[in-house]
Length: 428
Image: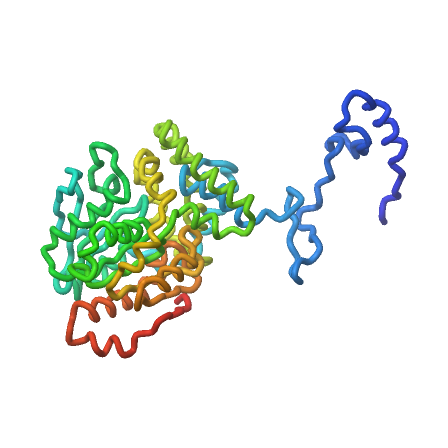
């Protein structure tokens, strides 16, 4: 039976008399409903209560009184998990992570990070020591990994492609087994210089360059910095989950509201500033919040149903990069625009992106594919920023097709005849 409603007028009148002339903020507001409800605050709706339908779809109302949008949750996970790993709500986090890790996982037996090649220490243009490994023989592929990862991130490419190709992998400066630059130079120009040093070391006349995220940004800087290389030694280019413009601007462009975009950008830059000022404390917070880091990695690195083993592998790799390096590399990924260099890419190019990539949105891939003459766009459905792991079979086949086209002359004509402009692949 419904409770009998009573008028709140006497209570409001008493509150007005008590607050008149003293506290205009509370004047005219209803009295508290009970000892737990403060004046002026609406009562909490029951958990799971439904709000009015929006576009025909009911939205669940949570404890805060409204549905928390993915953007807002994502900001907290990115800053707290992917960047710092700050723990909050530890019990809930561990419950969610434990449940996620127990999902069916076809990749559970993969020895992630366990494939080793022939190691070489290479001195780059400014004296920085780079760790290089090569596997296999044949036409040459050079791989450049993304921010806070290592060459081990190319796990499936290291496993599957050396049977047909000479595959050269290197750790970016300050990452993995490579050394740090003496003058803390992590600029895009320095990264492009490292790429040239690796290409010089291969001794190859023609290679295909495969680059992910930050590695792809460095590849575009390389094209601008060394214009004779693309079309000369670099015969083909593969950009995976990469962009041509400020990565933070790309992330915030993926959200709908300007205010949310501004908050996200401010929070991300603030987190990196904190890491630079107090790296020891940031490292402690990251270790303490490893479960939240896993959730942030899953949200921002993968599609809707990723392999728990792949997520854990990427999360562990991210956590292995020193926070001081994070803080020093990040300024290079803000406020740049390499759109002018896209037209200078005069070689066959494959632009691959996951349609759930929340770090370098697919719109950036589409723009690059439009501006790079004769390029192909590969859209991998329900894949995120780590599409090179999630959809490795499809991507590896496309890399091999491009390599055969530009590095194996006998196969080039046949490949060109059936070369599509845009290919959309459903997640396998």
